[in-house]
Length: 240
Image: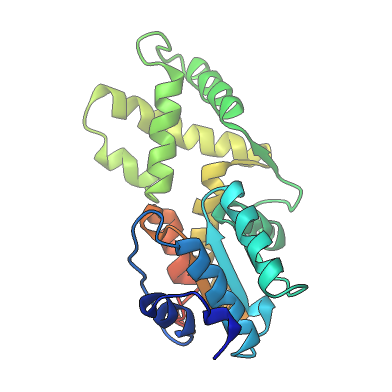
């Protein structure tokens, strides 16, 4: 029996030793989810002979990603696996395939305060009311639309009230301004990667081959864009 199974209960062992094909693990707080996911990665490498570069481990915070990497280093020292956030992965992929998405590879990433200032500037340029329609509220709405993969042209047809009609006017102008400045925000990292996988079959297939095994910690927290990315990387090799 592998040392990686020591101390695990039967359900945890089943999860750790499942290698090929999709797998959903349902577990409550404090039940050892991080232990299971790291032991499963280590088992795949040590017992399954899988190249660590073929394994992709995704989570939602840098703290969780750091913890995952530290545990893997203790379990399988020197075996480098990409363990990071969705945003970190997407930034890496967009640097690599920037041209396909209308960007230069040296694009800048705006933080939320910079995005808020940009939205406010666009609203003033369009002579829109920034007192009764706060730019921060507009920026939050645009962020929500991006994470739901609702593009500006699609939202124009959905806008029903005054606020949404304002957002529908601002949204495409914000996108156009950011592209002209070769900038993206954190939401764009997800949106553009999801589009990259959907609109470029050859790139999607290449990345699917590169990352044959995709593991997502706290999978229930994925939004639409993150789900599209995880699924897009798991078509030809459905080991999600």
